[in-house]
Image (spheres, rainbow, N blue to C red):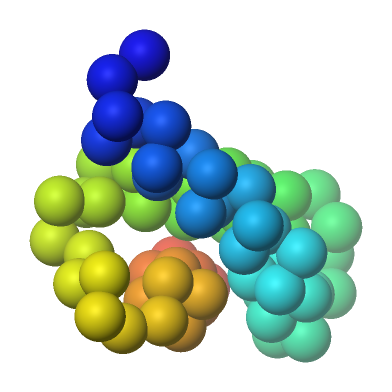
Length: 70
């Protein structure tokens, strides 16, 4: 596993509880919530090169989740 993937995975793992709580606050159906969380994880990993490390990773991931909820 390359360093980029390790860093993305580490940051995502720490962010999951907060991102999941955010999605749950908007989506009451648990199956749909799980689908959106998985879609968000994929989008985060695919777009990790655009993440600015000087900003909050959780905030960035929540922005992606917000777009997925729409």
